[in-house]
Length: 314
Image (cartoon, rainbow, N blue to C red; front, side, top):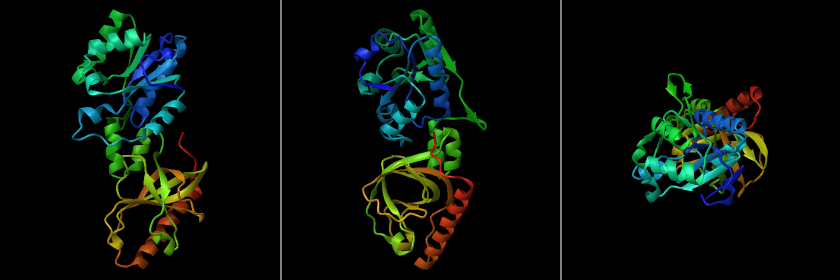
């Protein structure tokens, strides 16, 4: 996948691609359906597929008082889209000036004049242009006028609700990572760097890696079964998110105990895949009670991995 960051990029001159457009935070099952259809249609038309996305996320600017915490880091989003087999990704800077582009101007200036698209594949709920005034019905009318095809892709439903990024964010915040994974088609992942902590886990017989997460959105406080990707190796782990109430602390931390692993990994980048929540964070009356609970948590993770070998999400 080639990444473009400007409408004037010479690579765009002769593409005449099939395009899809969106923020694609989470690259969930609904996004995957739209992107896959874009790729398939591009192949059928003998041209290239192009994903047009924005930086920052449009709601970061349009809802600056209550911006969403993003599911993926920018690099994770690009990685996930690339794995799908897209030919090109165009990263558009979303500014206040750009946000005032009318729907008709967006189509004429960007889709027709700058990209010269053959077709566009979009969710039935897609909105575009100033104040979201453009919808799929307007786009179809403009497509006939400017002679490009508009393919409306129906939403993916899990249960009785459509899959969308807002729903996934709610599930992750609530610690319901198994349900969030179903909507994304893969386990929720967090990237971060291992830093030095106070080494309490080591003193209790369960050394932990203190992780400084790069992701904005983190699961709710609690103890989770996770997979830890370190230097290309995927290892079973247990991860704690919380404030360590047993020790009277109030600063949120993320700590991971990798099963049957004792090497120091300070300064190393890691990726955690969140599988399931074991329990909520608990304040224990004494450290020995906490140590006993950690032992049960580690045993629960070990039992899980006896039946489910650690394998990375695709």
